[in-house]
Image 1 (cartoon, rainbow, N blue to C red):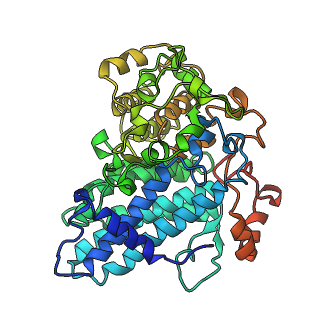
Image 2 (tube, one colour):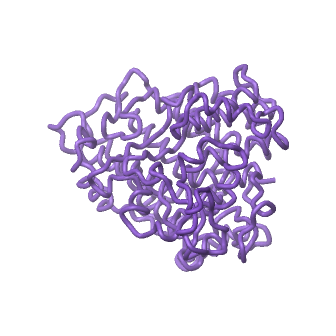
Length: 483
């Protein structure tokens, strides 16, 4: 495992980020020079985490392709679930561990050296810990067992793999501690935090909402604990409007500070490899979805069309990506009100107490927030929701299908989560409704471990693999929260 904390990563980010006015005021006291690197290392970790979540690069984050929001028309390996050539499992693992978690861990070690009031220092530590929880939840729910308790310890070159269920429950406990420990009357990072500008109240809501999300992740296998943690999260105060969204403010002018999709599709050559997926486009067409013209352009026939996953083809004959995807300033999103509302709708369907709303009211709330977030109007959302195929009481299927399909649409740009919700809710069932041409396997339920782990950390890697079904490191192996 590549686990050395690369301070140069943080410092490079510092020089890039501080070159722009929106990334100034990185410390509370300019007379204390240690405060500059501490805040900047935190910002580097925060930005690197959002970057890897947001990017479309197939060497780390091919999740829009797996979820068939997008597909590949050339270099179609990931569309066929073939990850060997470009090694996304290695890239996702490395980027989260070595550029996000390592910087966040390093930042935490620096706070004690700052001349700060104790409540401010504690807030900074807890906010950093919340982001670490987010990063680890991406890892554990992608691979299964992962290095965790020893992962960021520089003195341990070959960290053990911790049990995935144990890690997940510990992440929830860490969120409990953060929610209880954050002091909303004290400050934190200020402008060094590009998500909430150091607003501790917002971070407390973020922690509660992430707790709600993790609680529902385990709801199929441990409904009792899930119910308790859902109630606690709601009581703590989850997102209540889109103003609470955890968005990272990308900016134009400096390439490294621009939205990764702009970097990939506009400033680089990757646009030639990607197109909208036929399944996603056709679904939006069938539902008269107002987000369709917001997300995609029309093809040469003045219609909307997408590529067939796994087939390849000619991009010029298909719809293209709109300015929504291609904007340099389009923010990265880690968690939002749309997701919160869908989670609450699900909680109601499971019989969990969440505060009085119905599944239908939360479902409607989620769709309205999604359409507004993409730039649609209230009128368009109302018309959309009034269709029998969309209306909660008449849409096809059980609650998993209704919420699953609409969440998939709303998560058009939520990358890893679009793939994860398909795995978790089972809809859309890609294996049945649109299996890729010449797919190497059934729909992936996880990533296999990076080959470098087998080579450099064999004993612990082998322990983790033996716990997988049939002791095989395969993408179709179920994680513990999947029935």
